[in-house]
Image (cartoon, rainbow, N blue to C red):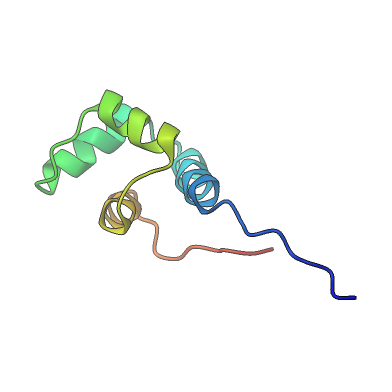
Length: 78
């Protein structure tokens, strides 16, 4: 009998990925908001915190965040 794999919680995965990259680079939500605003994406620290907390944001937002903090590569697995 084949063992069934549980589907990944994609929202938690993406949320964890972004939080880890911010922590790795020691970037606060306030600093991220300032960096995003500088490239024409006006955000507040509170709005960013809410988006990340929910784990629901667009791929565009994720890429914008990763770009402004200098993240060029992301590791998805172990």
